[in-house]
Image (cartoon, rainbow, N blue to C red; front, side):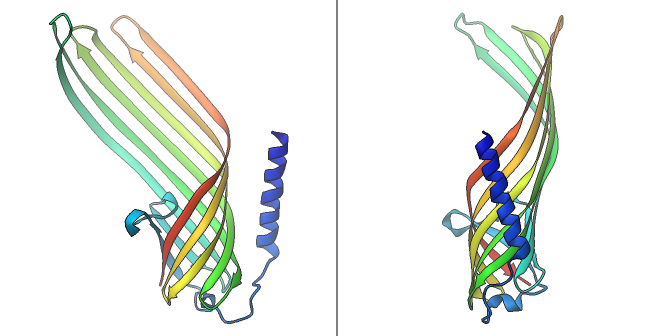
Length: 235
C-alpha cells in the first residue's frame, strides 16, 4: 500500500512539474495560434455518433489563456423532488387477499466540479498533443420518506438519508485535431485520484417499535480507465 502511495506522489509531482515549466515545443505555425482568448463548449461523442455531456458534466467549456495553454471547467448539477403513491393487491398460497398501499417523498441535490489546466506540448498545423491536471469536487445529499400499510403487517414508516462528499485530483493526456477553424475533435485518457466519505441513515418505525441504523464509509480510490472522445466548438 505504501509503495502505491509513493508511486502516486511521484506521478502527480512529475505532472505538476511538467505543467509548470514546459512551454511550447513547436515554433511552427499551428491552429492554436488563432485560439488565444477564445471560449469553447465541449460535447461527448457517444455511440452512433450522438452528442452527450462531456466528462459526465452538465456543462463543459474551455478558455484559452494563451496560444499553448487553456483552462477547462465542467459543472454537473443534480436536483430531484418527487412523490409516489402505490396500491397493491395480491393473493397468497392460502388464497388470502392481501392489500397494501403506500406513498413516498424523495428529494435530493448535488453537484460536481471538474477543472483542469491544460498545456499543449507539441503541435502541428492542425493537430496538438496536450496534458492537463486539476482538482475535482463532488457533493450529494438525498432524503426519502415513505409510509406503508397492509392487512398483514400493519402500518409502518421508513426514512433514508444519504450524504456523499469527495475531493481529489484529475489528470488527462490527449490529442486534438482541428478539422475546421472553429471545431476540433479530441481523444484523451484520464486518471482520477480522490478521497470520498459517505454516510447513510435508516429509520423504520412500527406501531410498537423503532429501528435506526447508520452506515459510514470512506476511502481513497484511483480510477484510471476512462476515455473521452469529444467535439469542441470555439467562438
